[in-house]
Each structure stands twice: as structure tokens, then as C-alpha cells.
Length: 330
Image (cartoon, rainbow, N blue to C red; front, side):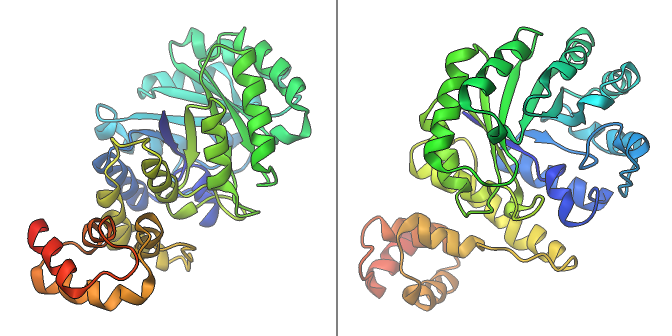
């Protein structure tokens, strides 16, 4: 089970067609430090879109590819690509700059037109992922048939994309089960949050057999946003999954670096890291000042203090108990 963070591609919709070099580097470094090492980045419409689709981002494809070079030994970094841009020239560019994967995207029912692109990616020696955008426009059985056809072209992984955030958990279960039954490659899920169900849908996908989950830091993505990386990690860790990711390190990066940086773009964070911690731990917000004061007094991090204390008492943690936990953390 793993996270594919799409902030630097889909998340770029919140600022235009792509993030600038400073934010791109900041986010890559923050994710790698927290143990999130599968990253989709670049122009929000994908490799080749700058010229072919007039999707003008702060950096060209080559500029994005050049700036990721120091990070390639530390992470699996790749780019999205609309199936019409799956040209040999773009394959050559991806190979030249050492991308680890390309993810071809097409609307559900348009998969036949993408097969040549899948074959080109594989012939270039790259991992090929595939996004079935607007997956809900087909019935589960129809989507599974298309997935099987694409898998037979040599695909390495296939993603069910809830592009409008319209799917319900029971639908996600049905679609995921249909695809995992039809193909022998990993099935991924990409959920948007238009109905506030992105995390619930990710859980449904996981329980039905999906093993890869698209996310965006702070929920950044088109429209109502993607499943927030930090929310998915926290929720999945509560279920016993994704323990290898440093949640506290991720939240520290968001608090100190990314949230202040995105304030410059007037980006509103729906669930801030501290509120996430309250939900994760089951701590009522009325105890906030007590926790903050003791964390400051003992010079210990607030988030672990809340979580570890709440394991002992969620109802009414006393000052004495919080001090005991703070002393152990120190």
C-alpha cells in the first residue's frame, strides 16, 4: 500500500498550470523527508501540454525536468501525460532526464486510443501508469473491460479517477472490486472531495483491494481538491496502514513551510494540522490551551503530546497526566 502524491501536478490547478521552481523544490524536499517518495509533478495538463495545449506553466517541461535531477536518486518521480501527447519525442525527453514513470490519462471509454502510447512508454523502458478519468461514466463491468484491454497493452498500474468527486463509498467498492478481479496489476484510486467523501472513498477502495492512493498536500487540486495527503496518511495510520510515513514530520513541514507559502496565493486549508491531530487522537478542542501551555513549558512537540496523552484519557485529561506524558516525551 502506498501514496502517490499528485500535488505538484493536479495541485498546481490552485495557482494556474504549475508551481514555480521554489515551491516545486520545497514540496519535493518536504515529501521525501516525510517518507513520501512516489511523486507526480510538472505541468498540470502533463508532459507536452505546454506547447501542444498552450498550458503555460511557470516552468517548461525541460525546466521542470532539470530541477528534479538532485531528487531522482531519492524518489520515484514521474509525470502525467494526456494520451494525445504520448509521442515518441516526449518519451525521449522523459528518458533523457531520468523520469521513473509516465502516467497516461484518458477519459473512461477512450482507452483504445491510448494503447499505442502505453506501448511507447514501455518500449522506452519506463513504468507506465494509467488514469481512467471520469471513471464513473462507465458501469463497473465496462470499466473493468477497458482496464483489462489496457493491461494487455503492457500497463503497470491503473487508476480509477473520481474526477468530479461524485462517487459514493459503495460505488468505489464496486468499481475497485471489478477492476481488481479483471487485472493482475495494481489498482489505484484518485478521489476528489466535492462531496467531502475523498477519505471515506479511499478507505472503501483500500478495503476492496486498491493499493495505491493519489493525494494532494493540503488537499490541493482542481475544484474542491484531492484527498488531502495528510488526512489520508493520518486516517490510514489509525487503521494500521502506511506506518512508514512520518506523519509528524509531514505536519511540521506543512505548518512551518507550505501553509505560510500558500498564504501568498490566498489558499485556504480546510483542515489544519492541529485539527487533524484532534481527530486522530480523539482529543476535544476545549483542552487545547492546557496542552499548548504544557508543551511550551516542557519544550516538547505539541502533536505527540496530544496523541500520547489521549491514548490514556480522551474524556478529560488532567494537567497532571499531561505533565507526566510531557516528561516522558522530553
